[in-house]
Image (tube, rainbow, N blue to C red):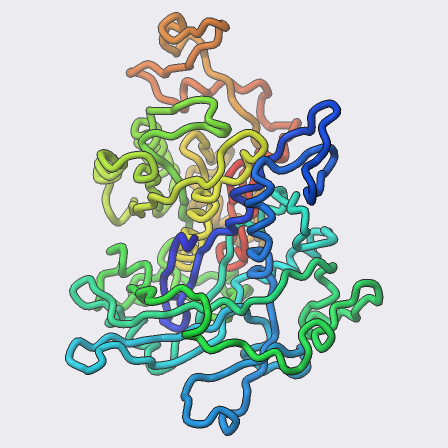
Length: 511
């Protein structure tokens, strides 16, 4: 699945947020007494996959997260064919732009007055937004991918994030939004995967030379042995591919935050010393128009993990949460509205419409969770994709970013009266990641509706906040006084300096 596609603010790249489909079939169950694993199935600690056939069928997905080096075949060997051709190569032989790629990108322009009206205007090679193999190595894991597929905990491989460089002749047009006329795109991109088998060797055995690692002897991956020197990639029209993906307007323009024709540089916040210290992963410094922003993934209704309960008060939760966070000093909030995954008859638009558009932006996000059942509750593909999209679309235009659920409140305390003041203090101290201890709060029973209204046979009930109370007040019953001493690390909340965000560190759905 491709969840989202959008151009960078400078018009130089088209960025993709896609899903690792194999993780959708990573649910597990324990083997029963005396039960043997089916033929060909690899068990793990007496567990097997529920959909092991689909999980194994999706093994090639793992390769898309691993770079491949390619070398251009000289044009004199291709005759009159203008399409560039490539072969798999070693790092030493690879072209500079083909050192760490995975997709061929082909750009096409639509001109209704021409015959034919669709013409090829350029080619490029993709680059991952984050180096997944290096990320795996830095986290201390031995393998980026395994044949068995018990890797749901490796959350950084949930979202496939990559970008296609735009042909230079179109940089300015994409940056200015001129590739969209009357809401129709006239520039398109095709994405062609470079197909290889996944590498099941330790990632440091095939890291790019700029990391400075010397390869290990055991299981060494040698491209000339694995691929040979004549592994020529097939022509694009003979390859499987995503085709005719429209190149739309840059994010701020597309969502009306900075209208077309307005110079975003006239809206930037004053630069401070922290802005001069860090360089974005792209090498560019997009203009910052906000100091602190928040992202949330929400819906009018949703089912909790493993489908244990249905929650129908999404609108009320969101309205209270937005009111609080705007009062507490967030400059802008982006709401990824997931209601369309459940219904076509309702959305969060009416709630978001209560707030000024310069403060709250709605992003229609009907992407479904690909797996939400026992054994695979951690794969909330739609939410992880929304967080990645918000960070790459809008985080680049803010100094600090945090991603939260609508039942999570970040409260400025002590001498701080707003999150803006907190951010200023973090900048002064040179902090890159602010981590806040967190643990679930308990509701005050005296502020809930009568439990008898929703009591089940087993004695459980649905805690319902009364109409004249707020969620924040009702759930302001902490089992530990401040400052917290106990720490549930998997529930920590984080706010990060946005230029440093390469990939989400997911913890209770938070960046």
